[in-house]
Image (cartoon, rainbow, N blue to C red; front, side, top):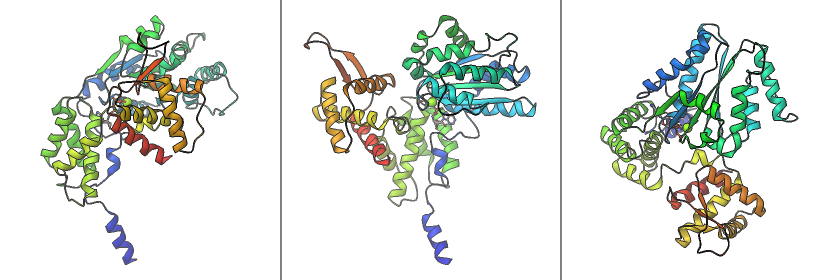
Amino acid sequence: MSSNIIEEELAKSTIFKDESKLFPEYVPPTLPCRENQLRKLASIFKILVKYPGKAAPKALVLGKTGTGKTVTTKFFGSMLCEAAQRRGVKLHYVHINCRKYRTPFTVLRKITSMLIDVPERGFSDEELLAKLQDALCGREDVLLVALDEADYFIRSGGGELIYKLTRLMDEVTHGRQALSLILIAKDDAPLLLLDDSVRGGFQRNLIYMPPYTSEELKTILRNRVEEAFHENVVSDEIVEMIAQASSKWGDARYAIELLYLAGKNAECEGACMILPEHVRKAIATTHPEVRAEELAFLDKHQMLLLLAIARELNRTEKVYLTTGEAEQAYTCICEEYGETPRKHTQLWKYLKELHNMGLITMRISGKNHRGKTSLISIDNAPTTVMIKVLENELKKM
Ligand SMILES: Nc1ncnc2c1ncn2[C@@H]1O[C@H](COP(=O)(O)OP(=O)(O)OP(=O)(O)O)[C@@H](O)[C@H]1O
Ligand SMILES: [Mg+2]
């Protein structure tokens, strides 16, 4: 018993009170600096609670990486559900990360499963859509669906499902307007792929999230420091240093990641507080454009291919690789990891997906090359950081 107490005490962190408050998926109890956006969302969607089934507004949440699109929409979704519950309205909020639920079918399945049990297989998209329609017609429930990473979803062919979802209740006579949509995106260019009338509906209700200023990042960081760290572990000077380092991007995710890593560095060294050197080390090993939680959604072979490209670009110090070179590097990596390489056509599909996700860029070669080939490069992050994160993720698999 007494040895347990000692072990427990030894296992306690002197740095962190609760690490999970720094995880990217954590939704904090307050959201500073996003009050205007929350207000706008409330004014658009209050009708779902006031007159459920009477109208199905749409909205578009737009902003760069780490500007709080996901957390603000989730926060809003749960606030609206609470308000609905207080009034006896059956409102369900569904937040779908389209990078995770990659295909229109899996997205549709997730939405439908909010109302009824859906078997994993045995339905076509159309049948599932009809089931969802029936379920919405026969009940009082109202759905608010947030499609996160919608730009990626539309680029990889999800536009048709968005169109069908917006039209779902129009086909039914006396159909209740029971399904509202929020699209969340970094970039609104892919919206051009949507039908004009559908796009207009979203763009009319635009909620823009500007990059955070250094002052705003400080406020966000201070709140997290209080939730996640023991007292006196993080000084205001350190908060300022991290806010400064991330203000170039206005990216709260990067700021919180730096705070977390700096804490980890301090813990590893047995320090009792975060020192500037711990922050510097964190800055040296991360990049805002390389996000482990995003890379974790990739298939194993997509990861291997991306790792091959990153390593080859790093080794050769070239600006780009041809598809042939990428394929060769990938084959070598497969050998290293004891995997059977995928066929050429599959690799081509993977490359297009990686391009759609913004992890690589592909363009067709110019005159200097014999014949046409695609040129592959990684432009927005150091390959060294990408390599480290991917190797780490592959180790976890
Ligand atoms: N106003 C805020 N208050 C507290 N925490 C915030 C705020 N804005 C963002 N965060 C935190 O910053 C991180 C990034 O936010 P979020 O994931 O919502 O960004 P995003 O805009 O969805 O980024 P991406 O485009 O990369 O998906 C999360 O950990 C989130 O909790
Ligand atoms: Mg997000």
